View 1 (spheres, rainbow, N blue to C red):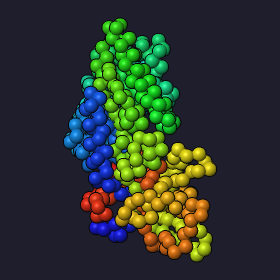
View 2: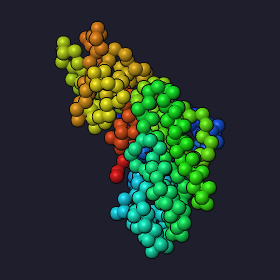
View 3: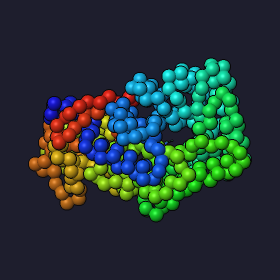
View 4: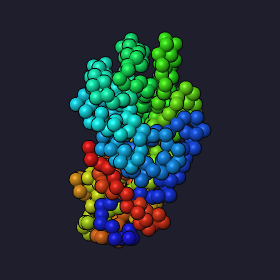
Length: 375
Ligand SMILES: Cc1ncc(COP(=O)(O)O)c(C=O)c1O
């Protein structure tokens, strides 16, 4: 199949860029002395997971049970479900834990009590991480609080649930555009859990593992002493947000949305493509509102280089509006039926809009990989 034959909008995955991104992070983890447990929320795809496993991933991180089910069906048996556990999901988790090593995540004493009771009743071994807040202030216990210490102690003493250790995610690194600030957050991410683990161990609590990970911190950190594993996700594809943060170059962005021009009224100064928010998501990216683009346009779908004269200025459900930058002109360009590629602001959300990757190499479609996007 050629690119010209694919119905648009469609998600393209450049195989060689993907493999280079995977190689680089695997090498980085080896150099830093940590195991990799990639987060599959970015790709939701067994074929990509296989390539991560071939490069030494020790297991995977998932954000949904369907992702976990898909990986389990493909034979991957060491999975961390990295969303704080909600008690109504304990039954489903127990069913899955009969087939794989399932590591759950929590930050709540009552949820742990319910989990312990259910695991003991079912006679099924579950694992659990204690989620630690390293400054993102989303989920996670405050490592300085007495409650966090008590919960860790309680989890480590459990017979029904195996305590895996401490896990954190520095999501606030997505606001750090200065490399020094990003490096500082990476160090704070490491220190929050390593220092908490040290205090717990000093008090006789066994902390087997210490897990950190986000793409902005993992691409800059130079020292992960005390950490045992890392869970980056976005690095497999990167996107324009990671480019803006300085984590990668535009040439490292592995996914794009193939779109067709569906309207270009003569003299209007705008071309409309069939990729809207349901193909790209509506992630505004990191720019200030007045400079905000909803993606970057590659005018030639076969030779994907960003065209600096074009802006994707707005998205509605199925429409994307392209305008020229100040001083440029669309006359004679982008007629109805022309095809462009659009690099996404956020590759994880764009991927979750699609059922399949069209895997491309040198302008040829070489494969189709399923995306596990059910929730
Ligand atoms: C708990 C957890 N771990 C790891 C990651 C991976 O982060 P990134 O996609 O920045 O690599 C995420 C992303 O949201 C996460 O929530």
